Length: 438
Image (cartoon, rainbow, N blue to C red; front, top):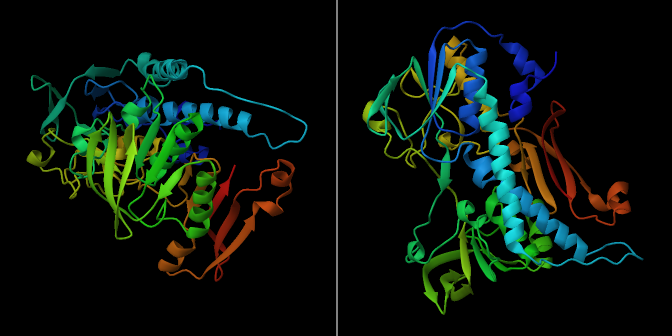
């Protein structure tokens, strides 16, 4: 059996998962609030499950959600642009001279914008164009009850099941003055027409690290400020310490243990005052980029009014079958606050639609969920690391191989990083892996 078209589009499941449930005629209807990967995966799966009607209501935002518009696609193409420039300037091979120069940042951004537009059309709008059961509506949806929404507080739409897949957006830390200085997020940084002369990056995880290295390679002077004592604080130090040194070797200033106090504008730029190891320091730059976390798009939707349970941060609480506190209301994607990856959202959207329309009650399984941070070298992981495994009660044993012993890395004259496998010594089961490598 070939992998289904939905899987190819969204990279959300395997052949075995596709074979687990065969399409059936449910005759039910599904209303989806949101317009990203979870929403479109749910729509296509709903059609496969025999839904008589699937309605997508997207809140006046570009169709496609975070990944294609303000996340994966724009960031990765700009990261590659920075990589081309960096490698041209830093050639590892004798007898070969290369050089590179950024001559038109606006042209780089315009190429990125065209790519975003093309993929939004090809991977989202074109997918549902020929699905006559699917209707796409632009408007803000407010839940009236477990089966009804009001669009822009006017027209009402009803369905047997409602799926909330509204995603998340950048969260703003509570730093006095930050809201007044004209900060950047991933939603605005990729739309700049001029390269920042200098940049303060607040944060030390995926988005912060990728943007810091990208802008530094394109020519900005970058200072990354992280609240905890390490970047990627949930990962082991044998991964984060080398990555810190590699980024600093490229000119990215990384300061950890930072307690931001206030932000203000000065001489046309931005100044952030912080306590670092008990001392007050000022950090100045032309721009400041906030990458300190995400917040759910659950405001002004009437969720709590009808009884949908939210956590303390506003993310929707859903069970492992993706059902919320209301039987006919489901949730998928970043709005859950669990694993904010495009392929996870696609997986959850399809699973939620399937459970809603067939009552299959399949449970989401994240045991072998892979992830990557697209720095250079990249950081990749799957399963648990040794600390997580030991905390879970396993007799974790680590096998680690530095890339300086890998012939392919030696031949490429780039031996940065390591490969690490974690196993349970009692059962010989592979529990997880981490790779720091180009």
